[in-house]
Length: 65
Image (cartoon, rainbow, N blue to C red; front, side, top):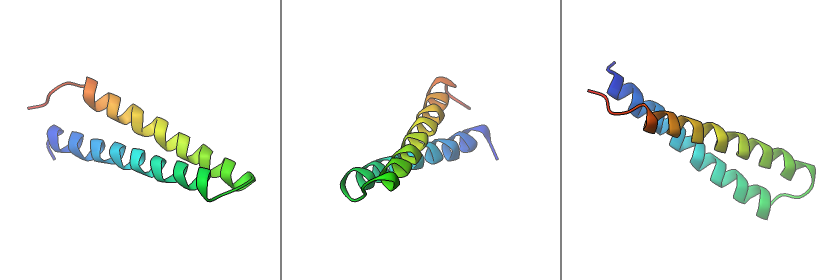
């Protein structure tokens, strides 16, 4: 697999983590209450941070040939 294809799959995983984070935050704020809301929010923020780091890595790694 080429470096460009690998970067594509990594960036798709990062975008997927960001989409999961959006869904979990909406779920935690509007549907859940109490301790479960805190756990889901924590998981969402972990996904948000990991997705952001992945996207930053892909953007700053530069173009591939």
